[in-house]
Figure 1 (cartoon, helix red, strand yellow):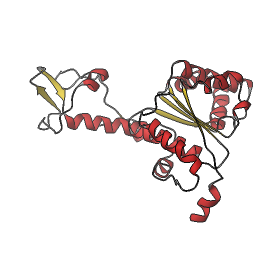
Figure 2 (cartoon, one colour; figure 1 turned 180 degrees about the vertical axis):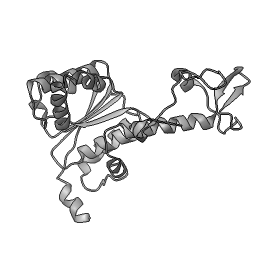
Figure 3 (cartoon, rainbow, N blue to C red; figure 1 turned 120 degrees about the horizontal axis):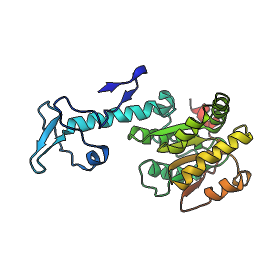
Figure 4 (cartoon, rainbow, N blue to C red; figure 1 turned 135 degrees about the vertical axis):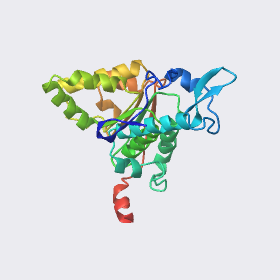
Length: 257
């Protein structure tokens, strides 16, 4: 198991040679190979598969690499560990708003790859649990070893403006355009400028055309968004729109504490 500076776990890369000179498999090949149900390597990490006449990773190593990569995804997702532990599907309270439970079940299916559309759009008034579901889905996918980046829209707009001032915005835009899953909370609450609007459009437009997994939440009605974004959000081939209905749960949460 390897570590990078600051303690963040990093997976072993396929291109690194083994000490005995046997090449590692590339990621696509490794993912396609069957994994034995138990350790067969006797501590050697590799064992000879008689059927294929080649060395393959043992189950113990494959599981270790999966665990290390999942830890890397969790630590790099942009959500504080305390939030990841407490804001989950298990801590959702179904009795608070019946009109939100379909959104919860759909978000859970999205996080476990049971929803076919690449985008999930959560909308509704404040206090219904949109952020809870967005974080729960993002955290579950990161725990599964999927690269996720979480941002609130106001924070992203601020980071983009600061990066622009340092002439460093392009790498951030490129990262958010290409990351496997982007979770963008409170869309429409950002302090909009011509530059931030352009950057948001660039990020979301690329993700839309490449069908990259994207979770959005907003308190704003759909008609408040620019026509180009509204057109994408209403594309049922790409976006699952979830309207949360009910009353603000926060006073009831405070009463239960």
